[in-house]
Image (cartoon, rainbow, N blue to C red; front, side):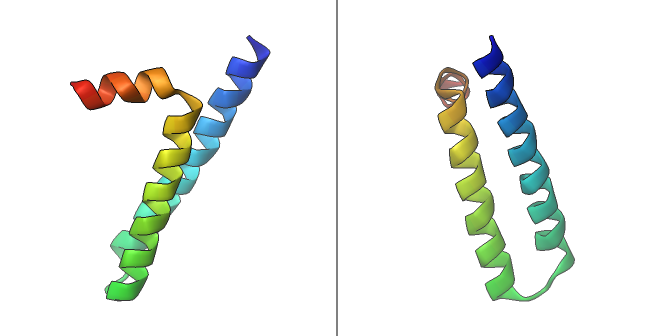
Length: 62
């Protein structure tokens, strides 16, 4: 149970980072910056999926 709570803490942290990146991505017109931020968002989303593989597998099948 403690490990599950810790994983959810990590998910919250990743969600915070993803949201911050999306704000940055939406606030710039520089294409290279937008691409770099999009790559970072993908990386964070992959990290989040690794924490809860069952949830991400169900989501991708829907």
